[in-house]
Length: 320
Image (cartoon, rainbow, N blue to C red; front, side, top):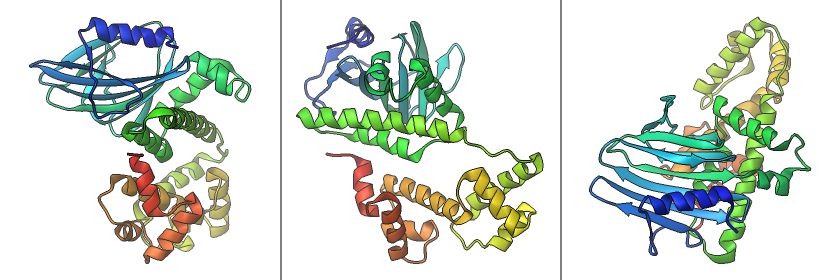
């Protein structure tokens, strides 16, 4: 089944002289549309899952700046580009690169300009109101509008490494047949769950004085710069201008964990990013994020994620 929003995209591509490319490097389950000429080379892969969501993977190149207007309907999107230079019109808002962003559509059009000479490579998930009704209506009261709010909140918050990994996995997936259907469905569900979880966590804040809030911000910055080294409580208490007991209490109430757990989480997050890049050995990553031995790093990683670092790296690259 193809819903109205998806049909609009198919019609738009065909009306724009795109042709269907039978042999391509993307997943076999979707359809790859292509348009090649002297000024640009466009490959746009699209997979439709019934009336619920679509997944798109873009691989495009423009010799000169290129402006395109797309039809827009009532849907919400997650998108990630590992290469792009462009901006939305008429707002001139830059299109984000190397992070996951959200877009909430409405009946009308979306216009963007892509800079020439810069490859456009990315992946997108487009979700319809029917998805909400089918999967999470009873579990997340508030209607499709609440899901929209959670998606929009993503743009004003620090990104989720777990969500970034899911988007990369979808982008790199080359599975076929029924297994691909199951894989794409599970990954979209996972992405939505991560967005909702990320939004809910941002609302759980602790009320404290402005002075203490500033001290926590300074402490967070300090830890962010020094997490790979040896950090002790007296040193942190000095940075925060607090006694050790007050520091431990204020930190726990602000961040929902103790300082050691927080530092370990930062180390874990940084390790995940490095593992996804596939350029540094596991032992090198262990040293880079603050572990004296690879075994200590591997033990921590397994306890936190349930898998070994090398297996996480394989998973992040997606099935082939």
